[in-house]
Length: 352
Ligand code: F6R
Image (cartoon, rainbow, N blue to C red; front, side):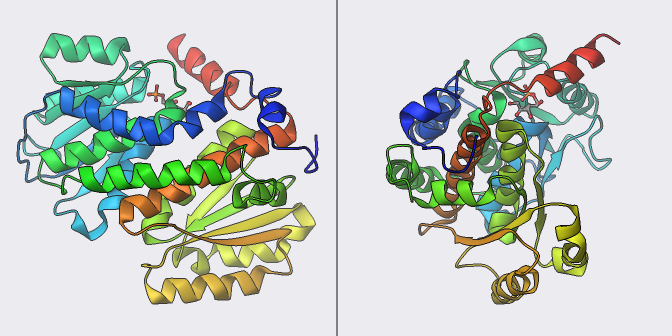
């Protein structure tokens, strides 16, 4: 398929057999539902001066990275991600560990859950079930029950809100209910503008057409750094194409040099995720970097977050990236939902 394919609801439905688009369009309601679910889990506030570790992989871990981005310098304690089999050596009973696995069966997350127990850390689990829910039930560990029926990466509203709320409960961040509510309302308006019923030249459709057939390099800074990573992973998993992400200013100390040889290797494109509140030097670097790679990039975009609060702004670009990744899948003619290689790998590990 090509970039001239229509991105209407009917054209998308012909490719999107499992309804991945509907899950993205449901983001506003999922944010509200996620707040209700965490609330209903009745988690006890407990100050843990050692901070918060969000332990999980892939589409479940991304919520921790996005929550840290939303909190920014409102985080009063360290918030780190553990995406491996071991926890940091400084984990103690004064640390909260949020073990987040949508399926509840991811072996790294199960190992992290056990490690947190062995170290006496305060554990909280977010999952739909699986072995993680069984273990939590047996150990009396509180569980935030996630709704079934999603691909883990499509449940981003839930992993994000769970991490934000747990950060608030353990003293690592502020509770941000009002901010999330406003962000959900903003996302609703953006769904109408960028969704399939929006115009064919909407920002989301235009970017998807521009990135189609290229290897995108997505760059963020500060608030938008975890969003750049979300764009990369969504394009990998939904469109099934290579895509890479990096952050400013670091990329201008290495990656920038690689652009010189890019046209010899293929068609590369660049996306810069900008935000009004970035360090002024980062904003300046975006413009300088864009100029420096202009003749090597097949396409380049500078996109700015939309909204007032950090939650609103971050979520606006998560939504945009998720939509772009689905549109890219449709332009390629591939079903966005199945992740057969990931499933194959998990099966191979489970087999020994
Ligand atoms: C699949 C996806 C993956 C999973 C990851 C961990 O949609 O996004 O990145 O999130 O393999 O699986 P869970 O989330 O079930 O622990």
